[in-house]
Image 1 (cartoon, rainbow, N blue to C red):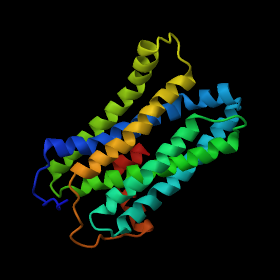
Image 2 (image 1 turned 90 degrees about the vertical axis):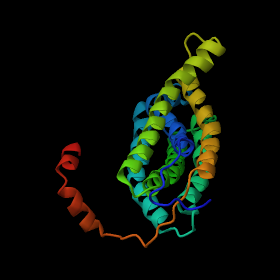
Image 3 (image 1 turned 135 degrees about the vertical axis):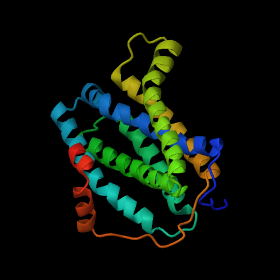
Image 4 (image 1 turned 60 degrees about the vertical axis):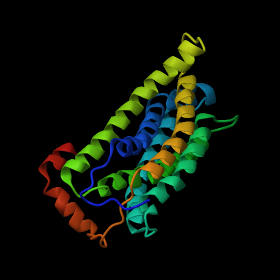
Length: 239
């Protein structure tokens, strides 16, 4: 794949291909937050406190893994595969751990849930963080970057819609279930994620140009980063 010149606008096809992974990534987030606790409470019999503890620990570890994956992705020098390679590597981890997460076997307990969550969020981060960074690197032009971000966020919105409509279409309309359980709803979205993420990542890697950095990126210290963020009043309000 040839490098993308800085001033070359992306075609609609490339933008659509770039937006695809965000559909699968965000669709899977909804059942994790809304229906996964009910699945483990009703099918596995875990206490709500145990489920909450596993979720808190997994998300806390994700706060550590996100910047680590981002830093490693920045420092990966594998030609045009700098971002795409991380996405390809993270996809099977996210898919396989997602299947295990939504299909707990007999005897699955809090430790099983915690390990599955840690693996899933790790794989998800390996896809999502480089994916976000890739979008920034597609152009140095502000307007073009805005187009890229707009398509990506539109994909995220479609992912949220998919997580709502997939159980409705697959379970209620096609299978005729008048009141599908939380577990059934979560698994319906999970199967969509299982098949769509590898396909969408493949299409993204195949059809989205990859721009090599023209110079070594400038790295700043953690103290400098927090100093810069501290001067950003809207960011402080958001926090």
